[in-house]
Image (cartoon, rainbow, N blue to C red; front, side, top):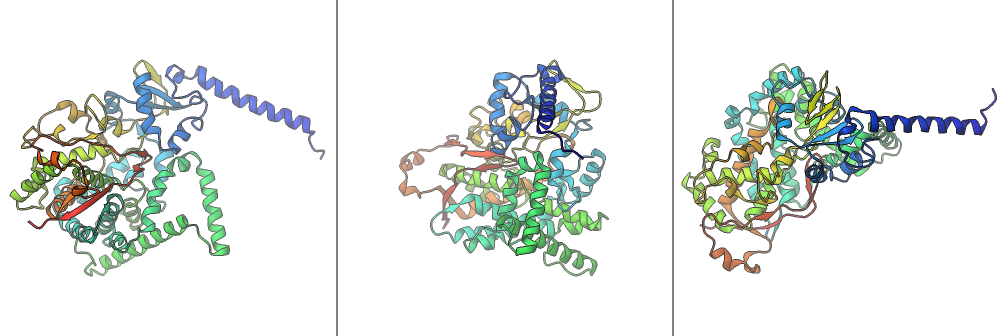
Length: 521
């Protein structure tokens, strides 16, 4: 067979390229989305020209709110993708029984071990069934069962940070605490992150799992390429024995998870006493007739990418309190008046603690991901624009937490947004409460909301009980000690949100350093 002349090949290639360009141009000018303002010049032609590079740099949820201020509530960020910033539209999209389903392109990348867990389930009926099962441990009425588990790990955390003679970088040690809590809760076995921190190391299988969150733009935009790269890595490893640090850490993590899972299943089958006296997710799910491999996926997802949000919130709150010694002392007195109770109902009834936690969750805004949904059959109309069926629409809860109307000076930590001036009561503010959606809303509201609140109530109360937290360096090195002496109730030194980038979760680009002074009173 005669080979094709080079000139003919060139003509065919040119014809294909022209055809692709025409398709892209048609998407720009003839799509129903063409009337929506574009995020950038290339946005209508391919998500690789605006959405992907902005996501990859950890900037999309930082840049889009500024664009929405200029361009309105709807912005086109891809040929078939629209960003929205509107509480009314958010309510419509995320309400109970909403017809807007999760986008499998994104949620599929969170599947652990081949069995979708609650977060990654896209079918509403299946999601509802799984949610009811998991309510056995996550519902508010069940939190008292987890108090002992959390306190056991928080006591270890307090002892670990007490050994720091000089200063503490809050981000890694708080992450270690959450990793131990979540592994203990999920598998009935602690992963040992606090022990590693005490020995001066960060557990690679946790650090690399968190790092995976920053790679989500690659995984969702180039799944084939990523799968090929993973295959190449496995092939090289099987031939040479060499593994990249990331590959080795992920292998160690999955081996640890499977070993812990098997041990828990064995204890359950033999009715032997578990190594942990507390309830765990694997055992509870298997006892509820969930397949054991699916229980493994649920437990593994609890330690997967983007699950470091509570630890980041705890670190930010303690860091902000380091600049406010008077508020700390008032909080200490409030806790002492309740005999340092560890009961959740008692703790959430302490106004200063409740305000501190809610403001910390709002201010940190650790869960920063866009939440993509598909427009249902028949399309939908918002703000005078028709969105065809299967258009991807997305928004981020953090935009509403940092809304400048609902929360003036949104990047400042100020618990008095929630408190009366004397700090004795939570004050009413309907607009504030409407925009406070850190766990999203509707049928897909975060299952772990009560879990996170309990973890933060207990962690902060125990730290304040045992330490005075100072912004590093220690107080006698600081120039504002006289001002601290003049502080009075209702006067709070506002703290600016640290610089960061945002992927599935927020990643601060600076360390959060404090000194912890043991209380001797």
